[in-house]
Length: 94
Image (cartoon, rainbow, N blue to C red):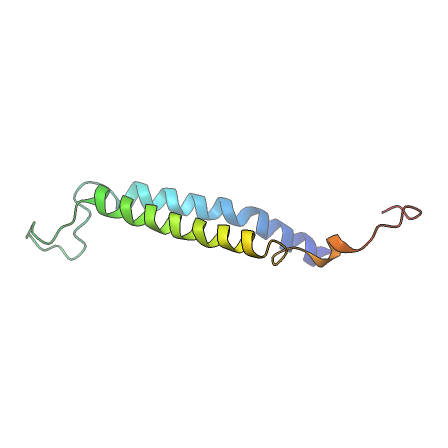
């Protein structure tokens, strides 16, 4: 029982931890002038943050949504739990 409690607590907290790390990343690394990690003075090698990364994130999101849509439309029960298909016994309460 203690192992299950830790397992569920970890999986409940994990998305919040990832969200906090993303916010820290956005706050501290994507400031003005921080797109030059090696410290070179040339402005020709720098890419503007918004168009490139926003488009890259949008394409990645669309690809993942397309894959999930194809998966759920072609084989909707692939990611399902087999326990959902066990017939219920009305004489036994959970």
